Length: 196
Image 1 (cartoon, helix red, strand yellow):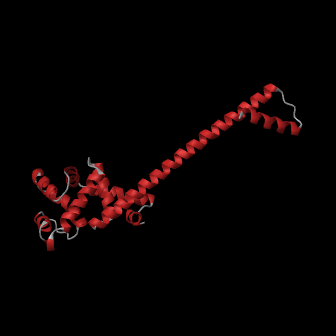
Image 2 (tube, one colour):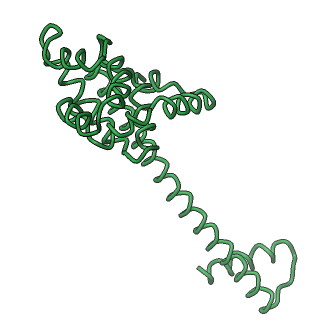
Image 3 (cartoon, one colour):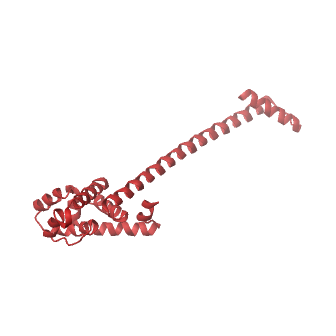
């Protein structure tokens, strides 16, 4: 490359009528080689950044697709699933554990015939809601009003993991409200994002 670059440079400078000496030519060729190396480094960095952006976009799309299907399976709004997961994660649990608990809870309720089974259990606990999202919202208060061992037994029967139950006892609403506020501030609506 250096030979051809130096020949091109020399031919260019000669056509302009410039006189070149060997030292100046070597200095100019070295500077051009440095520029070429830097351009190569920048191009590699841009390529790496682009591939990371594609990966992040793919992960976000997959996450939203998972959220959409979780919302469809559970009949619980995507916004509430996200807020609930965020709240549980702020209190020692995990988003995946919270989402799995929601899915198992909703599955148990779907399998209860005509208000019997698990719905009847919820009613004895003081939960009056007739939908999965409403029942989840009331369930934390019900767990908080009973001894821990009993709350844990009920939670296990309802498909709710212990970390999620503990977060529900402490009150996921305050963190869920914080999550909704953050989403409003940045102009995001999880329901719309999950559908799209």
